[in-house]
Amino acid sequence: MALWLVLTQVLGCASPGPPRPPSLKLPQPVGDLAAERIGDQVVLHWTTPAKTTDGLTIRGGMTAEICRQVGSASANTRASAKTTTAAARPSGCVPVQRLAVHAGASWATDVLTGPLAADPVQLLVYTVVIDNATGHAAGGSNAAYAASGLAAAVVEDLRATAKRNGGMIEWRQSPAAAEVAVELKRVRVVEAAVGAEPTASKAGEGKAKPAADEAPDEVLLRAGQQRLGSESQQMAGTIDATAKMGESYRYTAQRVRTVQVGGQRLEMRSVASAPVTLVMRDVFPPSAPTGLAAIPGSGSAAGSAQASTDHGSIDLSWEPVTDADLAGYVVYRQRVGDAGGLVGPVERLTEKLVVGPGFSDLTAVPGQRYAYRVTAVDHAGNESSASAEVQEELHAP
Image (cartoon, rainbow, N blue to C red; front, side, top):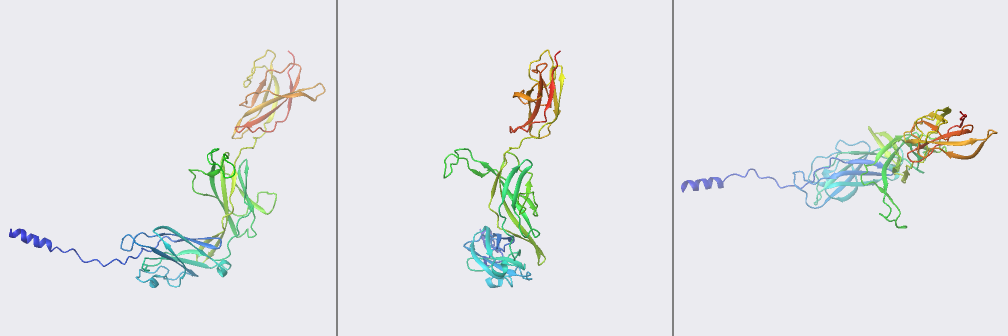
């Protein structure tokens, strides 16, 4: 019994360790602040912390204060942890905005006016300080850089046209072509099924919408003002060679001015242009066949689906068309009159497409002269112009 009492007293007097100081409930400083200049605005993005500096979940509201410094960043751009709001601000940084924030992705915009929206270009240094509900902060964020100065002009008259080799994207040329590049972004769109999404004006019409499985915007071009032989010398553009037939795309464009200031290489983007939609419909016929030749034959050449005769044939051959979407060929025939002119209707000799570059006309009548032409057809049903004409006659046996 005595031993039990001794053990109880010893265990009951065990030390819990040194006491912990009370939490100051200071939000962790932001570490991923980023700035992007778009038009006359600087768009800032960051992640508002969910934890305090001592690892506790933040309770209550938080306030973000955006600071902007013009010129070189000070040595105290990121302040050390303090318990008072004033001391937590980086020195030389002027508050430009305060807003309520919650843990997670956050953003704000700083509108540039007056000298900051005009040249000469100056370095802008931004930091964000997160205050707790009592107005205290642990310190400023990392520095994010942007440039003041005249913004690049908005891309005007953006247009898109389907071409055989891709989508031709054009826009009105900038007077400051030597100073800016143009960046295109593309999103693939699909047509909704008829009747699935009735429009406000007409029920049952298909409506273009982003594809359910589309990838994020894809940068297609970052180049200078390239002319494409447009009808107007004021237009510039490029070919999107990755645009596929049968697909639809939505494009927007931004001009990008790149400057070097304060040891930083920075971009100044224009506001995005109005979007333009390109429907890549295959309306482009394949190349016309060349090298068509005709000779009297025996009537046994491969490639003819006609019944064999006992009086021979007129055999045709031509150079193969190398278009990737070629489906086959069509052979046409017309009679030649005694005076050498073409008479009668043009006959299509091939009900089905001829796969290879050759054909035997087994229905030619001996003693009659014929003129032949050949066209190429692609998988979309587009037919080329006709080949050069060739004439031949099957002589009587």
